[in-house]
Image 1 (cartoon, rainbow over the protein chains, first blue to last red):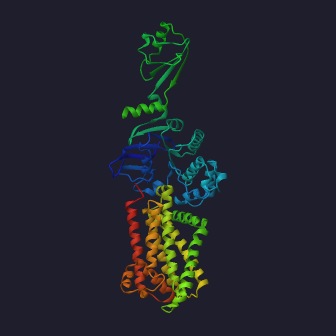
Image 2 (image 1 turned 180 degrees about the horizontal axis):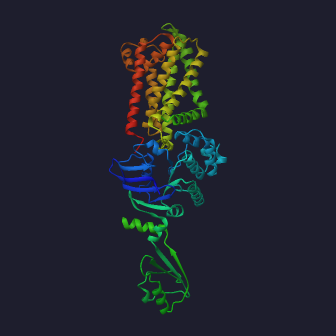
Image 3 (image 1 turned 45 degrees about the horizontal axis):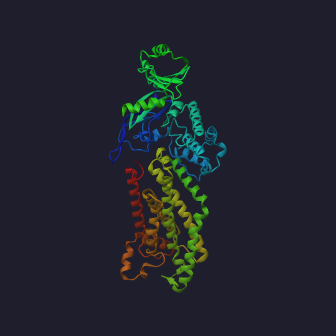
Length: 308
Length: 253
């Protein structure tokens, strides 16, 4: 598939010598949802700012729809909708005027039916005449998204869309992004919540200290870092681990009723058969087995620590 | 040229103006009325005429200029500072809008607002004094040029300011003294010796003098000099704006 955004060796350094982006390269395909995952200060917002025209690029190139954001900013920006991290709204303006204003800024003729559709899709229609200050935080965020969608962008940047919102609102936002996927909009979201990337994204780009550490399909990423944990429910509580089992990576639960065994699916032998045999030899009765995949969070921590 | 964006900014700013229409209009009109009462009636009763013009009428051009200067600066500076303060300015920079278009939208709206107030003050003054404007077209030209150039100055101020205090300091500490020392309430010829020379360095003197000429055909300095002064000021503001545009000073990181 063609890349709608193509970033090549993008660098951003400040006068004080701080390098916020150290040669980032990334291709984003049309219609996908990609999560830029990284801790605070990793360079996520700077990267978005550089593509959207808020940050002056030091060197390198960013193309949006084939247009260089530095050389043809107008044509590139027409394709982009941006929802920044902060809730920046003119609080005294009505929702309707606020959204209409953004459409005007993008040079598009008035189109009330489009704005109506956008507001309805974000459950904002009955709030259209309210001043933004009358809305809750979650609703304000929706207004920001409505503004960004007012000019039919092909690419939507969501910078930390759920930072500082409660669990319900977060799930609500995931639904909004899920619905966006159906409209064919390419979504680039930044987050430091692994759960969020796991829930929403098709691909994950892990970014830390101004460099992209890895870009991979979410499922593959989790597989390739496929650590799994086998939990064994024991017939009787185990007070101490027999010495013969000391070589295994085993953790005993506090009440001694469970043993956890961590293993790597990529290895030729996982050691499970041998473990079961050795447990039987020690006379330890296993009632039940359960294996869980490690979450993206574990994958992420592994990666950041590994490259640090 | 993204005319729709200019229109959108202009409309947005004008909506803000009309949303606070009473504050926007009441304050300048009230202070003008007070000036008429204090200077026109109380003091003017003892001065009689200045250069053959009734004192109450003589101060009208100065009063209008005082309001236009203050209004233009505060409208434009607040107009651009507010999005900086609330963070909504990101929207202007991430949209396909050039800096020039942004300036046109904000400055156009700021100048329109102050012209609106100017017309209202002139209308109010007709209630208090017997007024006849000799060169109405020139009066409009001076008004528009002044409103535009001081809105540009206000825009620069709004970009420069890092706090609301800084936003207020220029109109308070610079503009008001310049207007008072620029012959708003007297003719420069009435000043003692050295002050007549000093006031010639005050750019506002040229504005008020030119505007007064349009009203009464009486001026402190030749009207061509007034026109030249306002043009130079306009060009200077445009040059600074151009420089900000090129460097992204205080706007982009």
